[in-house]
Length: 461
Image (cartoon, rainbow, N blue to C red):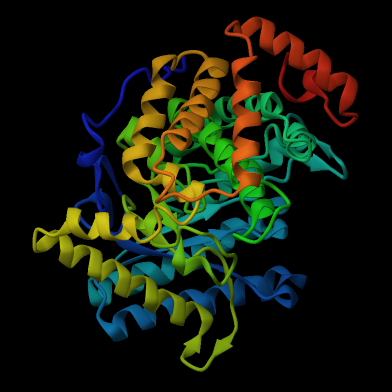
């Protein structure tokens, strides 16, 4: 039985801070996440040519894992976490991912035993549940995905994660049309339905194998909106629409915790501050250190409440300072050291607020995700926390209200952004408060308009 969140974990926004969560988790080799300190989580990808065979892929991960651990010890860092985001060969061939997890964990054990470094391994199988242009969320591909989780858990992965795609077929249609009800339906409703299913099963595997069901991220939808919105000169999508999509993604990511996830949440879930305010579970975040993979407009701000600090995925190759994973892991670890010294010297909240203020007024996205405003979105979600539709709608309304109440001299929005925000508010105001009516209307609308939407096959309607 899934129990929905209907109250906040933190009594006030100011109680949230980096390195500390109400419910920390502990990995096998001594690393605790959210227990009072921040740890770097290094994210990487193999070179394309390494994927031609299992042997080459295993060798690639053996080298990059050794590189990361050697650099951490050389520079004197006390802890490091690794995240292996699967290339498709590793998930579609579960034994590949399992062997790579085993090889990596063996290396981590060796460094832990010899040098005492605390460490953990996260594996993130890819969501392979699609056939060409169609999502296939339930069926043979789902079975393969679960086999992959079983294999990496057997191989030694401490944290199990994924970036699920439920609702993606409607999101792609809705985002191109500034369709706010479509965003609520795709992310908040369909996404949450899929999350509830998959995370219930991931938790069962984690419990059976003695691992930790970690967390998800709405990469397929909210990050798509963020990337389309782009930078301050881009007008492919209003940034106000992108942050509305992000706000709606918070109750969708929350559904994973309701079904059994325990944290740490995935790094590219920029909605994680909202989720942490509700669950009290630890989170990973990425920002200025993810420029090897993508740009954003809130690179310092998202560090505000992180428990793991990540770089997003970097291809394994040589740099002047060593291999790419060594360079990025060193940068991440120095950031973590700074955050931890702030905690040790009683300056954590001061540093947190400096990080926030450096980006809060740069863009509507950072403004809403600043921890004080993120907390408000969390409050809106739990108000109707047991209703997937209403809590997603509430999150969107809260986001719009926060932006409309912003100091226009500090948060400067163009006419393009203001018009998009006004249109979004009008659309939200026109939406029903009746969940069954909304779900029924959307089902008929998108079955007629989106050829690849297969609700009976994917969402068990």
